[in-house]
Image (cartoon, rainbow, N blue to C red; front, top):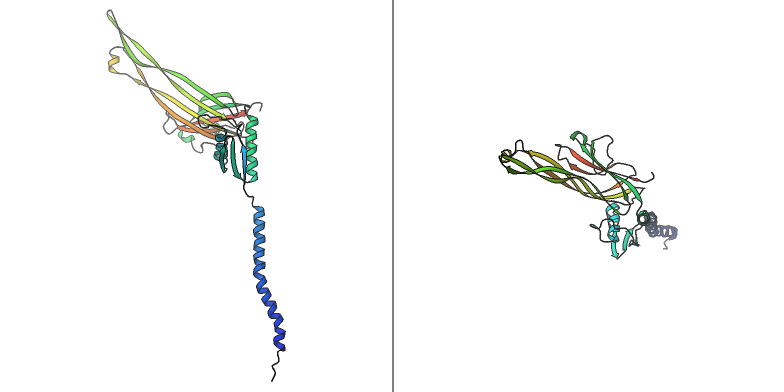
Amino acid sequence: MKTDTRPFRALFPLALALLAIAMIAPGAARAQDDNATDEQNDEYVWPELRVHHVGDLPVFDRDRFQDPVDVAMYLSGEFYAMNARKLGPGLIAIYEPPEHQAAFAEMMNSLRAARGEPVALRIAIRSLNADEIEGVQVGSPAPAGVGRVVLEHQQVAHRGLPTRMHSTKQRYYVSDYSPVVGSGAVGHNPTVATVSDGLALTVYAGVGRDERTDMHIDGELTRVLMNDHHPAAIAAVADNATLHLPSIDRRSITSAVSLRDGEETIIAIVQSPEKENGVLAITATVRALGN
């Protein structure tokens, strides 16, 4: 007796079709994933390694930088957090996307072009009470009308070159008395000493992005308070003799800020030696000459 195979023959093409779908579907899914990955890769901007010549950059702070490569490393790393490496004399390697590479090159060219450009620089010290401190921080604009200006110094600086700003005064005080004995009389001869009081800074005005000025400031603020002293030994020689004992408060100042043209910006805040809970806010204002 023969078996009728015609029904199985009719199912055979369907089985082949299902098998083909099973084999092709994973490949099609992988191809779709690959295409999606390619599209993502097309959108992602890959970093590039480029070598920049920076040997002609100005070295604005010989205490911190030995050569122009140190300047470029400082600007790329401290200000813009770029991946940078020294290669040798006058050369620096940057591993960043093309857009960042172009921005770094533009910054270097701006620094070269602006070297020696004069700018008006103003440094001021504001004395703030405890109730005026809120919201005051380094790098922020100085609040208008807040605090009393206790010191102000204006000077012309040049971009790319160090500028020394000294606004100090000599404070004279009586440090000792020497007895002078004469015939039937005793006198006294005061010894006068001096101490400096004020602000001494070294300022570098560079070139920043968006028409800003990248400024590095390094120096010292000295405030002197005089304390009266009436020693008994001297009072026996000179009536109402008073010694002045200076209390000297010295604060080191190191700051790096980015300034908008004409905007007063806080560059440092130190504790006031004169006011309890008060502070001294040191501000800087830079303006391109002609603006």
